[in-house]
Amino acid sequence: MKRILITFVLVILFASFASATVPGDWKGEVTIGGSAASASTIVNVLTGSTELATTTTPSTTVGGTVFGNDFYLLAFETTEGTAITFKVCGVTANTTTFSSGTHTLNLSVSKQANGVACTCAGVCTGGFCPYSVCASSATTTTTSTTTTTASSGGGGGGTTSVTTTTSATPTTTSTTTTTLSPEQVEAMLEIIDTIRDYYSGGSGTTLTPFEILDLIRQFFEV
Image 1 (tube, helix red, strand yellow):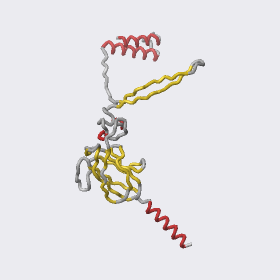
Image 2: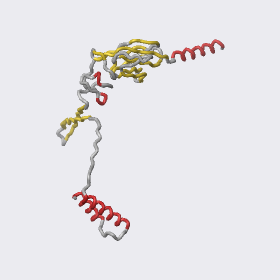
Image 3: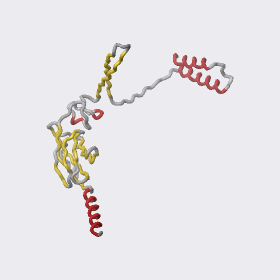
């Protein structure tokens, strides 16, 4: 019985150590399309779809030392042997196995064509990454085709293709100021007084609701 208990405890301890997270540091230079990455390039590391850490170049080391604009540094924790993936601007640069300690790993990705997912413009051939998609301008245009099959009588059917183009543009806010003329102000006040008298049962007006609506129509024609 004692042997079984000791074995059980050892199994629990082993499982506990096996699942414990440990720290690790990963650093290096980032290259995009054969050239050193510019400042503000996003670098992150994931296990599966879970992000473990993210940074932007250039990163600093302990003590505040700053390397070139293409330098990154990621410090994070996970379990030994975990598969991890490094991405640059959303593009996979390297997949490796995690181990504790300090590691040097230079990352390199190629320039991406329009339509490829991105998180920063530096990786895009077109030079823009609006709405997380590489593009040649700050706006993106997507085209979808809908095919409709119709039939009439007994003679079979035909197909009609309808192409719809949707342009996504940044949201802008505009303010429009409308200035009323003195005549419009006077007409509006008259309408307000008329409606107030009518619904309060006052004797100031004998107009019907239709006549009040006509007053409102005349206001917009002033």
